[in-house]
Amino acid sequence: MHVVDTVLGAIDRMIRAFLVAVVGAMVVVVFSQVVARYGLNSSLGWADEISRLAFVTMVFLGIAVAVRARAHIGITLVADALPALPRAALGRAVMLGCAALSALVSYEAVMITLEQWDERMISVELSAAWFLVPVIGGMAVSAANFLATALGLSQAPADQHGGVERL
Image 1 (tube, rainbow, N blue to C red):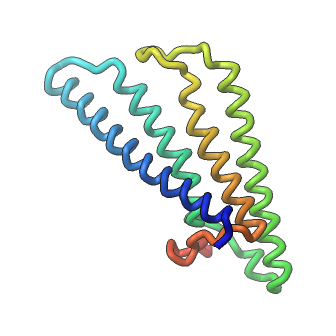
Image 2 (cartoon, one colour):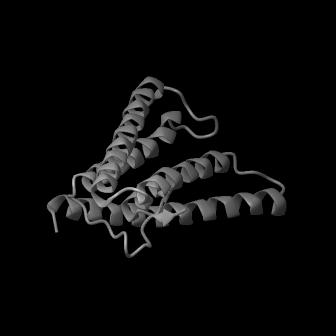
Image 3 (spheres, helix red, strand yellow):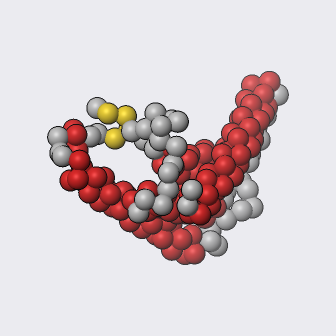
């Protein structure tokens, strides 16, 4: 196993553990908000923003986990029609393109975060730029996984998770 694969696997495990905590926190916050609204006729002012932040975190870190597991849907109609060598070249080119786009999204999210760090959330005394932090992390990890796969440095568990869905 390559050291890059080992590092990316460790990052994947940390993200998965963190996502379990985020989902748990979101369930508690949303449940508390429902009880407060309908049971106590009151509202937790911070619950909507915190649950929205948890949702954004789940989405973008979940993308990184799915990239590593190769669990995203892939349309392979053209690739399946190609001989083995061109199919492999196309697969690498797609992975490199995905790595570049993921890195670009991460970079742009960093630029926007730096620009907007002084803006505050409405009900919580936190920067609104915190909504972009999961975008930065998730897309950076996705880019690293795409690149490692394209370069043959990662043996991500495609078989374990069913690989790419063929349509």
